[in-house]
Length: 347
Image 1 (spheres, helix red, strand yellow):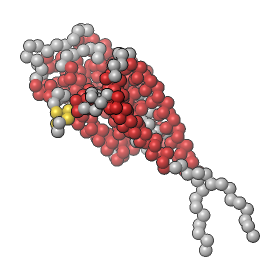
Image 2 (image 1 turned 120 degrees about the vertical axis):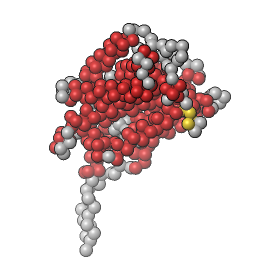
Image 3 (image 1 turned 45 degrees about the vertical axis):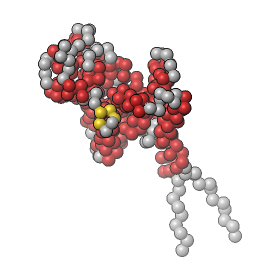
Image 4 (image 1 turned 90 degrees about the horizontal axis):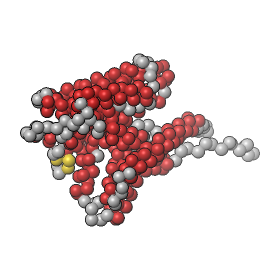
């Protein structure tokens, strides 16, 4: 006797879809590189172009990682562009006008950047102010401090120039590649270890995904959010030191130019490697996509307005894809939870 037909079981999400979502951005990078190499065979696929990308995009990559850390906790640090500008002029101010030894000047700027990060976290969490508004306000204050320190003018070194050791922090090579590229790789490795393998990083992800659940688990959400802003401030200060060594001139208005690329890379990175959540490896892939695209467009003779157009369009695309990835991840988790368990084997 035939029993009644069993209801159809929900379909499990296919692993291929996750693979495409996780590594589609990496495939896009390879595709863009191939397209520009075919279009510009004499200039694009060269060692000089690759070294230029690694050197010039190191600071945007580091600042994107600085923006990524608070995003893990669903907060945004809009002060990183202003902090970058203040950090790089302060390094030069201490070295040129204060005659500080350059290692001590760099250390002092890093400490100050960490303090700014702590203040951002305290204002957001203990002042209960939205992170957009709070960091925009503190960023504006940092910009005012930058103008006060520089008097609205550039800081230009004297005839002797800057110390050679300080310039070599940025303008040197290792294994035939620019040293700043290794800074980026080291920072990505540290952030990946902290966020993916240590309890601190897992707690940050819990705070970002469900603050109420974090409270129930005994995770101090306020303290961990302050940690995230502190890390963002320290990374921004490090980027400011590199920017000072790159430019070798203090420009009080240069930091804002890096704000849009940083958030474009951080948000687009949340759609790669670990789709649906901000992660350092995805941020690195996203910055690589942006760097390859911008370099190819520049070599094709793109006008000056193509750069902000590219970044603005990428930012909108990144926000849309990040939201879609988060919703898809939630649906996949719900579907997997609702799947009926396998029936026990017959006796």
